[in-house]
Length: 368
Image (cartoon, rainbow, N blue to C red; front, side, top):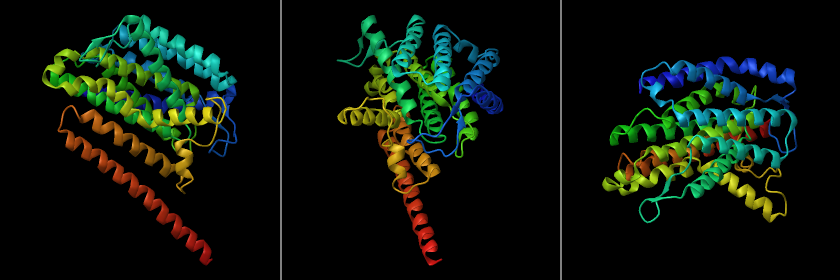
């Protein structure tokens, strides 16, 4: 565990230090987000935050490769995730600068998924009538679909300063906790691609967030959103490959389902926002990828919440789904459910406190 904590700390420090340099480079290169009708930010803001994350990840991996336990996490899957992430990063950098069309981005995302498949990162089994090993071609198709959905879900939810960064950090922390605890309790290998990649992603998000939270000095852009989406989805897939599902189900039938259930609960908020946007736009007769101001964060802000509070509420809602699922395999289900209800209650208090503050400020302005 100490070596993974060192990995998180290194990634955070390096990303924090590199981000201002990348920000200057983005401004000089013209990779700047102008103000559009659907945007919340009020000033042009540089993008390319994904480049800072990728540089920090590369340097972190070079350093932690010298650690005895973490060194064992480096293998074919970790290599494939790194190379695929590198490819999609450069796709995102080009998109941030020149605004690629959706078809080109989809093609690039599919190629990135192809790199994962070449290095053996794919869905191997499903909990159907027990444990069913899926045919290779079906597993590859499901892998491509899953990764592309997560990539675009993270991209869709990246609409407020620090929102996607914090959500991915919570998701990565949940994946890491689950994979590490699963390894400890079931005697599995603690050194694996899921633990390594999620530890790095946690650090990247923590290091980038101070520059990205409101008021953001830099956006992650499509380069960062697609990069993080691929990292988190690939980690989830490698987690299922690491688990001996049949062995676990002998003691606890629910545990085998959790590695596959976890990505959908941990990523519940981005996936829900993504699904709602697609359905909403198709019903309106528009392209599923046409922009609008009806995302979850837009709707919450129309309730009177500030950017910061809206972001915090969505952090809490993400944790409300992620934490209970991540710990359900290790503690009684009622305790896990109670933790989710507690987090939801905190989010309600945040919303009510904001409304009370708004009413007080309105009364003061009226008195003047």
